[in-house]
Length: 304
Image (cartoon, rainbow, N blue to C red; front, side):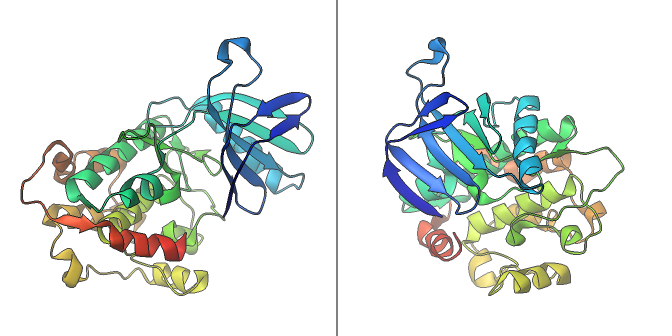
């Protein structure tokens, strides 16, 4: 991902999106993310937003772009990034989104500290589950969750926001759907085996996210995408005792009940929200193990 700082204006069908000096994220494909100043409405003049500008005309890209707009129009919750406006042309779509000024959970929050604790991670995972509970209750699955989708609302705060709904879809109960995309490291076995996915894909991703945040390691990561998918297909993973001996039994149980190969045996959202490990989010222990951010930093520098 390329990052650069500059000031620019973008025009989509006569609508000017004025960006502030900020970090522009370009994934090298069809999407540019940037901080921006107000859309055209006078009542929003001077407010800051995030602009997600997507380009494409192909049959594969345009439905994906439209899907995110449609999903954001349907979903409104304090743990989900909000949509304020959108501009569309023949080959571009700009979404004007709530700005999570605190940046990414990992890069801009956790890695700026020398250490964090299991209680800290339980708090963030609980917020993630609150957002997913809203979505699942209304029949929507995120389908693309990864650590880069977790943002912090304000600098210095710990209010989590979920973003990137390009793969989100509505799920009819009792049906499974094909999913051909997603970051290999986070996809569930049913994606690799092409047996169809449902809400269980999100729960598997929560397990992967929790595992990485607590250890700075990934349970299935291989030398390349093919090896990663092979590892997921095999469904075998471990808690390396040299590290996990410092992490609570409850945390390991939480992860173990999410990284279940059979989708039917995986915790659903309501069961996960009742798990005892999440109670740590409301507690602080004077002797709690301090997780050095160095481990997560090493992982982040290699795989992001």
